[in-house]
Length: 369
Image (cartoon, rainbow, N blue to C red; front, side, top):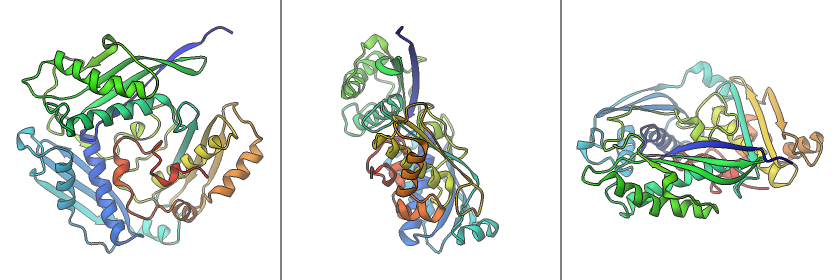
């Protein structure tokens, strides 16, 4: 059989990326609400720009939260403590939060969905996490960039950063890494050639070796224009929910119509996506198929999905009937069933807001039955 050689590229971003700052503030607020009120309802959005943060959205809860305090704690934790960056934990914050629409609340109170939409969950055998390889490597690179900065290994790095990896496939099997791209802002006093060498040695090489791959330094691009000193929201506006492809499968599989961060799980954009991933992962983990995509859809107030399908891309080892019966046994995909079955009404969401929502064993939707 002739070799069919293709490539696939995925990207991730560091925790200090402007969009991720907003995601983490939104989810930190959600967690504060859920600590006080497990049935609290939120849809919190943030906008980060030059020396300014705006928090807006809806909350239906009795919880008392100091929104500015939560936001400043997250901004400082992410390394934005120097006002010279043009955005810091001292920047002005404006809050525009209101009560959840009663027209939405009436459906949620009856254990229905807090939004309409479609959700997709995916799993495959490319990694031990049952996730596509490109996005898992991209996340690992982004996390490592952050760790070498935070641990003082490369103290000249500044918050913000991105990673990108191109994986080569032969007959659908990943066989090598063609290229890695890193974007990392750094102090002006350090030359790009030194930054590239340091990142290759401390970030790229160990991460790729952990996945069983390697590249030469000539296949690494760092800061494509040759200069990046000033990162963060003062250079590039940040928004909650703008990284849904990074948050899910890196473009390798379909994603739904809504983001996750800032939304409590009755918002099925989030809870439904977690349920779909749980089902797809367990179908693959139990060797019912080598690749699976689970599809769900709801309308506002719907107690059960209006669509529930599974696609196995010709890799099924059992019949559709067996696979669907298995799925129905491990999780009830009504809104109430998802909340209870995955134990989602608790403060677990801040850690999801950087380095991806899937492929990380600490989350309940990643558990194998």
